[in-house]
Length: 97
Image: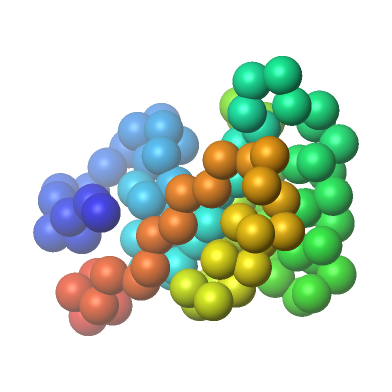
């Protein structure tokens, strides 16, 4: 978890990690494991958009799913076990800025 009290960051620094970019939203980042077909990542992206979640593709090929709760993040982890999942809940201290 990243501290939301840090001074304002440049856009280039915020692009390095989703926690710096979406600190007022919960998010799940999915990455393909080594020797995993990119098709699994495409399927996860399609499932997230069909379920109505906002998604973004990062420059490194990973997919970020925004505004989902822990149960939904666990569902994606179980449904796509070949993908690496990193979940970050909303930091309540960042909501009051």
